[in-house]
Image: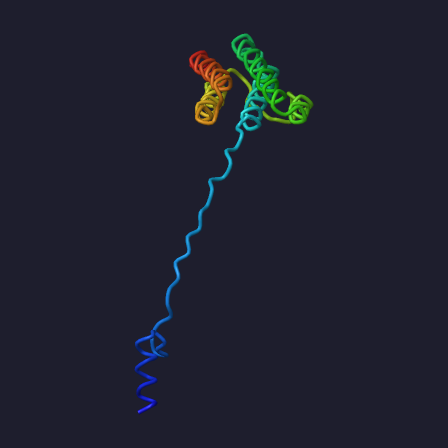
Length: 161
């Protein structure tokens, strides 16, 4: 009788060797990853655009008059972006200023071909999209800077059409 009473007590207490283990629910709170500053990416995109425009102008005299104003705009954009990077991080700004804005090894198509102008237009469209995408993470000052650059890139696309 003692064995049957012990078995009944264990069964009602939840200590049945044939039962499944009790599940424990544990709540884990995860915080969102910190927002990534898009400035260095936007600066790199702008620098690449400056390099490509400079190489195209150097290799293709027929389109130099058409592309030179666009290059000057992009150089101003690069200077503005570097100034903003320097404002928030002087070390990163100094590093960005030291990077070259020319690369003679970067090959570009020659001649005033529609393919060449389409490639330049594609660069402007890609850069414009990057600046528009950065609006959501931007402060008021940066949003104004990004907006003016995006608007200028829209005019570049029209100039290349």
